[in-house]
Length: 80
Image 1 (spheres, rainbow, N blue to C red):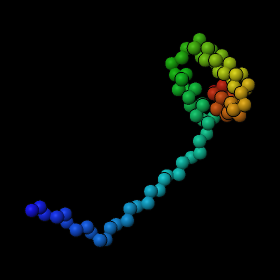
Image 2 (image 1 turned 120 degrees about the vertical axis):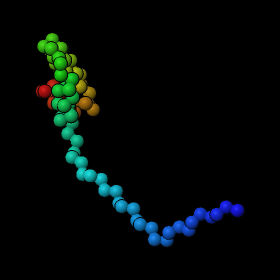
Image 3 (image 1 turned 90 degrees about the vertical axis):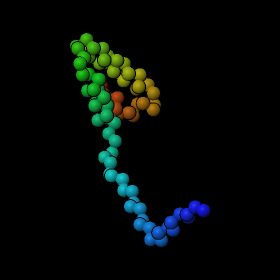
Image 4 (image 1 turned 180 degrees about the vertical axis):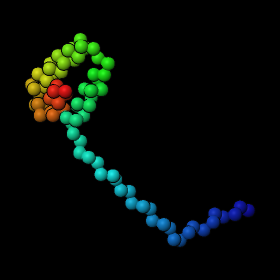
């Protein structure tokens, strides 16, 4: 015959409540500037000029779409 499991303890400790650390609000402009800086590492002058022209083209295209017209990230990337 096998031995039964030991009896459960009646006094369980309650689990600690999960407390989320406060987060800072998301800043799309800051994210855009960071992305541009990351992409620009190691670029030469020709690559920077091409990237700037692409960013200007994207800004013109975005201005024609309602959902992208209010985006803060695009102008921040272009300014950077």
